[in-house]
View 1 (cartoon, rainbow, N blue to C red):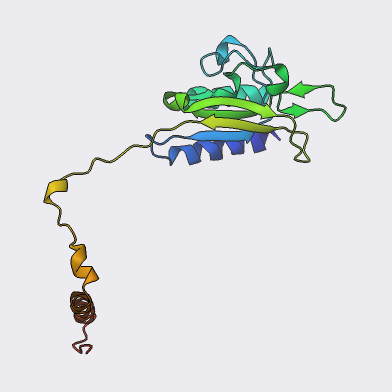
View 2 (cartoon, one colour; view 1 turned 135 degrees about the horizontal axis):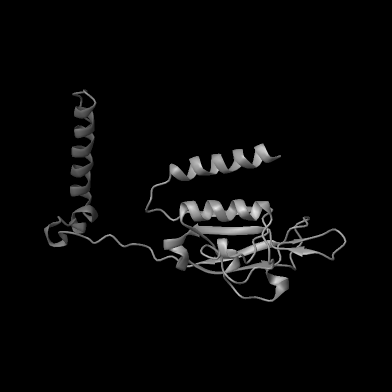
Length: 184
């Protein structure tokens, strides 16, 4: 079991290393990680975790986050306890927060909220995790707008000019393909 966990984090690290550094990276996963309120993890977690002490999986998540400059966003938003828990035991007595959302620390303002949705039945002992993301798209500036040629739409509406244009395009395509015949 320990080897599988190590392999998972090795594979995750390799995948992350292939991502461009300016891209937003989010990891959304059931990591079976109870993340506690220990000092070692406070640089990558929030104060709204259900657990006081991390389990081994929680420590692995925190170590990955620290090494790769991620933040565990699922612990940052204050909600009622029932909206923080992501797993419930079969006897309905124990609730844990084991599903987490990680994002690059420099992009963490992208995530507006994380909470569980308890009312939705997805035939699982895990609850759905809802994440609200707000991202502004970058608009590329249009350069040299005044120097661009504009289409004369009147020519397209004129049937004679339209036929001449189609003939010219057809001949250019034939020339490009190495054929010299023309269409009448």
